[in-house]
Image (tube, rainbow, N blue to C red; front, side, top):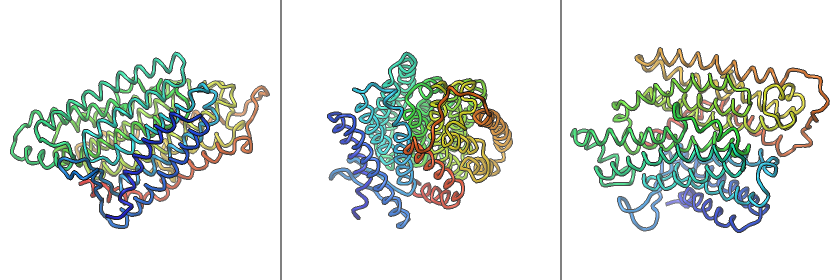
Length: 497
């Protein structure tokens, strides 16, 4: 086995140990260790991505000396390594983009704890991406939940405490359903490794055995992960969690945490149950309906908001609906579109949250639309970032969001029964996106005569400006190099199977 095959495991272990070490460091040292960790993880996973792309096949890393079915495994292919690289990069940029505001949002003696939580969150995301053991996935789901809850409530005010409690209740409900599903799968298959479970499930399904428990297990795990990823109508915790946490937390939670759960669901579709069985189950139609509903109701809720950050948060409900709608199509093209939209949403939503804080900073700290009028002139780089993010969400050509919507439309054409509702809802959702995002862009570029808001120049916020520029570049890369990226996604899904 080539040494590069150790990199996924090293990344997970480094993140865990970094969290432990950071708990004994002061804030500056913890921040530096976190930055070094993220840069190292990006480099390791990018190298693994190039390696799997070159070999054209995934590899299995066995933990310890115990092979399947007794031991634990990590499985890495093109899709896993690409996701791990992108997730790590977005987390780094999100932390750097919100670093300036962190001291205003978090008490000084708790800032080191903020980086501890981020290290644990990174380790859990990497484990969800790489693990080939379904119970290990559950363990890291719980680590992810606790770390995410901590990132919400570390900014201690009434709204964040309420939001974190609501988030914890909903997350534990989802976790309980996932655990019940794992217990059922273990009971009827006798395995915890994903590939071994799939062999047994296919055999049982072909023989017509345990059809009811298997259907229940599929339903529980799908609904459990849907709750944790805030699919409509399980999204009630989301607006406050994203809207009132620190800016970096909002960017990370919206872009990465929900996507980690969704990526795990994709792995379960391919590696645990089998895509053919998922297609034949009724649960895929439920996810399809909820996805379509989320696309509409998430956008309608965003339109009614007068708070710029809560508007962006409700927009996430709509965008998650897109992903589940792609799953509901039950086709390979629909799955490719959903995976691409995970990348699109992860990059764009972080850009919007980081840009929004720059706009509110030059608006007296207010997040209401009346106060952010003209903010694009007072903070030029934040205005540019928010405009690029908005245009991407609307789906203008050359932006990442345009490619996502084209892929979803193409996927709809491959499914005659579901084509019409997808195209109708896709069109309505795009119009609604344009209404609330372009309305906000017009507002921040509406000239207003005022002298009591001090403008911020690029030279006064160099690190912040670099972060915005990096996010903009990522968005254009996704939009302009989509052909190569979709090819990688296709290859990665083939490796899954």
